[in-house]
Amino acid sequence: MIDITPDANPVISPVDAISGLILASGFSGHGFGTAPAAGGLAADLAMGTRPIVDPAPYTLSRFR
Ligand SMILES: Cc1cc2nc3c(=O)[nH]c(=O)nc-3n(C[C@H](O)[C@H](O)[C@H](O)COP(=O)(O)OP(=O)(O)OC[C@H]3O[C@@H](n4cnc5c(N)ncnc54)[C@H](O)[C@@H]3O)c2cc1C
Image 1: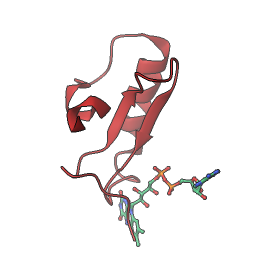
Image 2: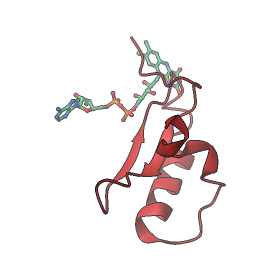
Image 3: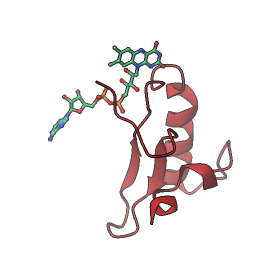
């Protein structure tokens, strides 16, 4: 069993409803391979630094 999102891309994103919470989940069977980049993006979001990749495809709000 794997965690999978509707578009098979992970959520790496702040959670608007809970200030300071960064979500990194739903890696859809690729969580080992993408972990270094995913962790980097999550850290950048948490620290408020310029992300290493475009965070738009990974926002939680894309499912609303
Ligand atoms: C059979 C299989 C093969 C795979 N092969 C590959 C592969 O070849 N390459 C690849 O890149 N990816 C692969 N994956 C996917 C990869 O394993 C996942 O994407 C990755 O482990 C996800 O990491 P995660 O930290 O998001 O979640 P997880 O590794 O699932 O970690 C979540 C953790 O949270 C804990 N937890 C859950 N609920 C609670 C709670 N309420 N309180 C406290 N702790 C809780 C769980 O016990 C778990 O330790 C495979 C997955 C499977 C199942």
